[in-house]
Amino acid sequence: MSDASQGMDVMTVQRGKERDVLDEVVRAMTDAPRDAYWARRLLDLVRDPVVATRLRSHIVTAVQRWAAHDPSFFVHERYLSEQLAVWAWPREVLEDLDAKLALDDSSLTHLVMGRLWLEARRPPEDMPQFYARALRHLREVAPRLQVGAWHEAMCEALGVADPAELALRAGAILETVASSDRDRVLLAILRGAARTGDWALYDAYRRAYGAGDTDGARRNSELVRLDGQRAEQLLAKQAIVPSFRRARPPAPKPAEPKPAEPQEAAPEEVFSEAKTVRPPSRPR
Image (cartoon, rainbow, N blue to C red):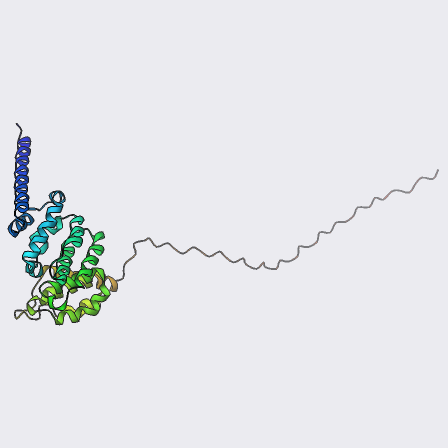
Protein backbone atom coordinates (compact mmCIF):
# COMPACT_ATOMS: atom_id res chain seq x y z
CA MET A 1 0.00 0.00 0.00
CA SER A 2 1.40 3.41 -0.97
CA ASP A 3 1.96 6.19 1.55
CA ALA A 4 -0.69 8.34 -0.13
CA SER A 5 -3.41 5.69 0.09
CA GLN A 6 -2.40 4.90 3.66
CA GLY A 7 -2.70 8.60 4.56
CA MET A 8 -6.15 8.75 2.98
CA ASP A 9 -7.26 5.77 5.05
CA VAL A 10 -6.06 7.47 8.24
CA MET A 11 -7.96 10.67 7.36
CA THR A 12 -11.10 8.68 6.61
CA VAL A 13 -10.89 6.94 9.98
CA GLN A 14 -10.36 10.27 11.78
CA ARG A 15 -13.32 11.87 10.04
CA GLY A 16 -15.44 8.86 10.88
CA LYS A 17 -14.47 9.17 14.54
CA GLU A 18 -15.24 12.90 14.55
CA ARG A 19 -18.64 12.24 13.04
CA ASP A 20 -19.33 9.56 15.63
CA VAL A 21 -18.44 12.00 18.43
CA LEU A 22 -20.69 14.70 16.98
CA ASP A 23 -23.57 12.26 16.61
CA GLU A 24 -23.11 11.20 20.25
CA VAL A 25 -23.19 14.83 21.41
CA VAL A 26 -26.32 15.52 19.35
CA ARG A 27 -27.97 12.44 20.83
CA ALA A 28 -27.03 13.49 24.37
CA MET A 29 -28.29 17.03 23.75
CA THR A 30 -31.59 15.63 22.51
CA ASP A 31 -31.97 13.29 25.47
CA ALA A 32 -31.12 15.99 28.05
CA PRO A 33 -32.82 19.21 26.91
CA ARG A 34 -32.19 20.96 30.24
CA ASP A 35 -28.47 20.21 30.36
CA ALA A 36 -26.66 23.17 28.77
CA TYR A 37 -23.34 21.31 28.81
CA TRP A 38 -24.12 19.36 25.67
CA ALA A 39 -25.22 22.49 23.83
CA ARG A 40 -21.88 24.15 24.64
CA ARG A 41 -20.04 20.97 23.74
CA LEU A 42 -21.64 20.89 20.30
CA LEU A 43 -20.72 24.51 19.62
CA ASP A 44 -17.12 23.74 20.57
CA LEU A 45 -16.90 20.81 18.15
CA VAL A 46 -18.44 22.32 15.02
CA ARG A 47 -15.53 23.96 13.19
CA ASP A 48 -16.23 23.12 9.58
CA PRO A 49 -18.77 24.74 7.20
CA VAL A 50 -19.80 21.36 5.78
CA VAL A 51 -20.47 19.95 9.25
CA ALA A 52 -22.24 23.16 10.27
CA THR A 53 -24.57 22.87 7.29
CA ARG A 54 -25.37 19.25 8.17
CA LEU A 55 -26.09 20.12 11.81
CA ARG A 56 -27.86 23.40 11.09
CA SER A 57 -30.98 22.77 13.19
CA HIS A 58 -28.95 21.39 16.10
CA ILE A 59 -26.69 24.48 16.14
CA VAL A 60 -29.78 26.68 16.37
CA THR A 61 -31.04 24.63 19.32
CA ALA A 62 -27.62 24.72 20.98
CA VAL A 63 -27.36 28.52 20.72
CA GLN A 64 -30.85 28.94 22.15
CA ARG A 65 -30.04 26.76 25.16
CA TRP A 66 -26.61 28.25 25.81
CA ALA A 67 -27.86 31.85 25.49
CA ALA A 68 -30.65 31.13 27.96
CA HIS A 69 -28.21 29.43 30.35
CA ASP A 70 -25.34 31.95 30.18
CA PRO A 71 -26.27 35.18 28.36
CA SER A 72 -23.28 37.02 29.87
CA PHE A 73 -21.03 34.95 27.61
CA PHE A 74 -22.55 36.69 24.57
CA VAL A 75 -22.36 40.09 26.27
CA HIS A 76 -18.74 40.10 27.44
CA GLU A 77 -16.83 37.56 25.34
CA ARG A 78 -14.63 39.56 22.97
CA TYR A 79 -13.62 36.74 20.62
CA LEU A 80 -17.09 35.39 20.08
CA SER A 81 -16.48 34.20 16.53
CA GLU A 82 -13.44 32.16 17.53
CA GLN A 83 -15.16 30.73 20.61
CA LEU A 84 -18.24 29.55 18.72
CA ALA A 85 -16.79 29.32 15.16
CA VAL A 86 -19.56 31.59 13.91
CA TRP A 87 -17.51 32.04 10.72
CA ALA A 88 -18.31 28.41 9.82
CA TRP A 89 -22.08 28.71 10.15
CA PRO A 90 -24.20 29.00 7.03
CA ARG A 91 -26.37 32.07 6.75
CA GLU A 92 -29.47 29.95 7.37
CA VAL A 93 -28.41 29.38 11.00
CA LEU A 94 -28.51 33.13 11.64
CA GLU A 95 -31.81 33.47 9.79
CA ASP A 96 -33.33 30.68 11.91
CA LEU A 97 -32.02 32.26 15.11
CA ASP A 98 -33.48 35.61 14.08
CA ALA A 99 -36.87 33.93 13.88
CA LYS A 100 -36.61 31.60 16.89
CA LEU A 101 -34.34 33.11 19.55
CA ALA A 102 -36.51 34.69 22.23
CA LEU A 103 -34.87 35.25 25.62
CA ASP A 104 -36.77 36.56 28.63
CA ASP A 105 -35.32 40.02 27.96
CA SER A 106 -35.96 41.24 24.39
CA SER A 107 -33.12 43.75 24.67
CA LEU A 108 -30.75 40.91 25.54
CA THR A 109 -32.04 38.96 22.53
CA HIS A 110 -31.13 41.90 20.28
CA LEU A 111 -27.67 42.11 21.81
CA VAL A 112 -27.00 38.41 21.24
CA MET A 113 -28.25 38.50 17.65
CA GLY A 114 -26.42 41.72 16.88
CA ARG A 115 -23.13 40.22 17.95
CA LEU A 116 -23.72 36.98 16.08
CA TRP A 117 -24.52 38.77 12.79
CA LEU A 118 -21.42 40.90 13.26
CA GLU A 119 -19.12 37.97 14.02
CA ALA A 120 -20.24 35.91 11.02
CA ARG A 121 -17.18 36.60 8.86
CA ARG A 122 -18.16 36.87 5.22
CA PRO A 123 -16.60 38.00 1.91
CA PRO A 124 -16.38 41.78 1.38
CA GLU A 125 -19.35 41.82 -0.97
CA ASP A 126 -21.61 40.39 1.79
CA MET A 127 -20.31 42.55 4.63
CA PRO A 128 -22.68 45.54 4.14
CA GLN A 129 -25.75 43.32 4.41
CA PHE A 130 -24.49 41.36 7.45
CA TYR A 131 -23.34 44.50 9.25
CA ALA A 132 -26.67 46.19 8.53
CA ARG A 133 -28.49 43.25 10.15
CA ALA A 134 -26.18 43.51 13.15
CA LEU A 135 -26.74 47.27 13.42
CA ARG A 136 -30.51 46.80 13.32
CA HIS A 137 -30.31 44.62 16.45
CA LEU A 138 -27.68 46.66 18.29
CA ARG A 139 -29.79 49.81 17.99
CA GLU A 140 -32.56 48.05 19.91
CA VAL A 141 -30.37 47.34 22.94
CA ALA A 142 -31.51 49.33 25.97
CA PRO A 143 -28.98 51.64 27.70
CA ARG A 144 -28.86 49.36 30.76
CA LEU A 145 -27.42 46.58 28.56
CA GLN A 146 -25.03 48.76 26.57
CA VAL A 147 -22.11 47.16 28.37
CA GLY A 148 -19.39 44.68 27.63
CA ALA A 149 -18.70 44.39 23.92
CA TRP A 150 -21.70 46.51 22.85
CA HIS A 151 -19.68 49.72 22.27
CA GLU A 152 -17.07 47.99 20.12
CA ALA A 153 -19.74 46.07 18.20
CA MET A 154 -21.76 49.25 17.61
CA CYS A 155 -18.78 51.17 16.21
CA GLU A 156 -17.78 48.19 14.08
CA ALA A 157 -21.26 47.88 12.58
CA LEU A 158 -21.60 51.63 11.99
CA GLY A 159 -18.23 51.73 10.25
CA VAL A 160 -19.65 49.63 7.41
CA ALA A 161 -23.42 50.08 7.52
CA ASP A 162 -23.65 53.81 8.35
CA PRO A 163 -20.30 55.70 8.36
CA ALA A 164 -22.04 59.08 8.63
CA GLU A 165 -23.70 58.06 11.90
CA LEU A 166 -20.37 56.76 13.21
CA ALA A 167 -18.84 60.22 12.68
CA LEU A 168 -21.75 61.79 14.59
CA ARG A 169 -21.96 59.30 17.48
CA ALA A 170 -18.31 58.36 18.03
CA GLY A 171 -17.79 60.93 20.77
CA ALA A 172 -21.01 60.06 22.61
CA ILE A 173 -20.21 56.34 22.51
CA LEU A 174 -16.71 56.91 23.91
CA GLU A 175 -18.13 58.90 26.83
CA THR A 176 -19.99 55.85 28.13
CA VAL A 177 -17.36 53.16 27.59
CA ALA A 178 -15.28 51.77 30.45
CA SER A 179 -11.64 52.85 30.51
CA SER A 180 -10.49 49.24 30.15
CA ASP A 181 -12.39 48.92 26.85
CA ARG A 182 -11.69 52.40 25.51
CA ASP A 183 -8.79 51.48 23.21
CA ARG A 184 -10.78 48.61 21.66
CA VAL A 185 -13.62 50.99 20.85
CA LEU A 186 -11.21 53.61 19.51
CA LEU A 187 -9.67 51.02 17.23
CA ALA A 188 -13.13 50.14 15.88
CA ILE A 189 -13.75 53.85 15.16
CA LEU A 190 -10.39 54.21 13.41
CA ARG A 191 -11.05 51.05 11.39
CA GLY A 192 -14.41 52.38 10.22
CA ALA A 193 -12.92 55.77 9.31
CA ALA A 194 -10.16 54.13 7.28
CA ARG A 195 -12.63 51.95 5.40
CA THR A 196 -14.41 55.01 4.00
CA GLY A 197 -11.36 57.25 3.76
CA ASP A 198 -12.73 59.69 6.36
CA TRP A 199 -9.31 60.88 7.47
CA ALA A 200 -10.73 63.88 9.31
CA LEU A 201 -12.53 61.45 11.64
CA TYR A 202 -9.42 59.28 11.80
CA ASP A 203 -7.18 62.18 12.81
CA ALA A 204 -9.72 63.38 15.40
CA TYR A 205 -9.46 60.11 17.40
CA ARG A 206 -6.03 58.79 16.46
CA ARG A 207 -4.11 60.57 19.24
CA ALA A 208 -6.58 59.34 21.85
CA TYR A 209 -5.51 55.72 21.29
CA GLY A 210 -3.14 54.60 24.02
CA ALA A 211 -3.49 57.88 25.93
CA GLY A 212 -3.92 55.99 29.19
CA ASP A 213 -0.76 53.96 28.70
CA THR A 214 1.94 55.34 31.01
CA ASP A 215 4.69 53.73 28.92
CA GLY A 216 3.58 55.49 25.76
CA ALA A 217 1.17 54.62 23.00
CA ARG A 218 0.94 50.90 22.57
CA ARG A 219 1.98 49.47 19.24
CA ASN A 220 -0.85 47.60 17.65
CA SER A 221 -0.23 45.79 14.38
CA GLU A 222 -3.59 46.81 12.97
CA LEU A 223 -3.02 50.41 14.03
CA VAL A 224 0.33 50.40 12.23
CA ARG A 225 -1.43 49.17 9.09
CA LEU A 226 -4.09 51.89 9.35
CA ASP A 227 -1.44 54.57 9.90
CA GLY A 228 0.37 53.31 6.81
CA GLN A 229 -2.83 53.48 4.79
CA ARG A 230 -3.37 57.04 6.02
CA ALA A 231 0.17 58.09 5.06
CA GLU A 232 -0.03 56.39 1.67
CA GLN A 233 -3.22 58.20 0.66
CA LEU A 234 -1.89 61.53 1.92
CA LEU A 235 1.30 61.04 -0.07
CA ALA A 236 -0.66 60.08 -3.16
CA LYS A 237 -2.59 63.35 -3.02
CA GLN A 238 0.56 65.43 -2.69
CA ALA A 239 2.79 63.67 -5.16
CA ILE A 240 2.93 64.54 -8.82
CA VAL A 241 2.44 61.37 -10.75
CA PRO A 242 4.94 61.21 -13.61
CA SER A 243 3.72 60.39 -17.05
CA PHE A 244 5.51 57.64 -18.89
CA ARG A 245 4.02 58.41 -22.28
CA ARG A 246 6.49 59.42 -24.95
CA ALA A 247 6.19 63.09 -25.64
CA ARG A 248 5.29 63.76 -29.21
CA PRO A 249 6.60 66.86 -30.96
CA PRO A 250 3.87 69.31 -31.79
CA ALA A 251 2.56 68.98 -35.29
CA PRO A 252 3.98 71.72 -37.53
CA LYS A 253 1.55 74.40 -38.45
CA PRO A 254 0.76 74.64 -42.11
CA ALA A 255 2.81 77.40 -43.73
CA GLU A 256 0.81 80.41 -44.71
CA PRO A 257 0.96 81.13 -48.42
CA LYS A 258 3.27 84.01 -49.20
CA PRO A 259 1.79 86.89 -51.12
CA ALA A 260 2.73 86.75 -54.75
CA GLU A 261 5.49 89.18 -55.63
CA PRO A 262 4.66 91.56 -58.42
CA GLN A 263 6.32 90.40 -61.56
CA GLU A 264 7.44 92.62 -64.42
CA ALA A 265 5.41 92.22 -67.47
CA ALA A 266 7.24 90.31 -70.11
CA PRO A 267 8.11 92.49 -73.09
CA GLU A 268 5.75 92.00 -75.87
CA GLU A 269 7.29 90.30 -78.83
CA VAL A 270 7.20 92.37 -82.01
CA PHE A 271 6.35 90.40 -85.04
CA SER A 272 6.84 92.18 -88.39
CA GLU A 273 4.30 91.18 -90.92
CA ALA A 274 6.02 90.17 -94.14
CA LYS A 275 4.50 91.87 -97.16
CA THR A 276 4.72 90.34 -100.55
CA VAL A 277 5.89 92.81 -103.16
CA ARG A 278 4.86 91.83 -106.60
CA PRO A 279 6.47 93.25 -109.64
CA PRO A 280 4.25 95.32 -111.81
CA SER A 281 2.35 93.41 -114.38
CA ARG A 282 3.67 93.33 -117.90
CA PRO A 283 1.70 95.21 -120.32
CA ARG A 284 -0.18 93.03 -122.65
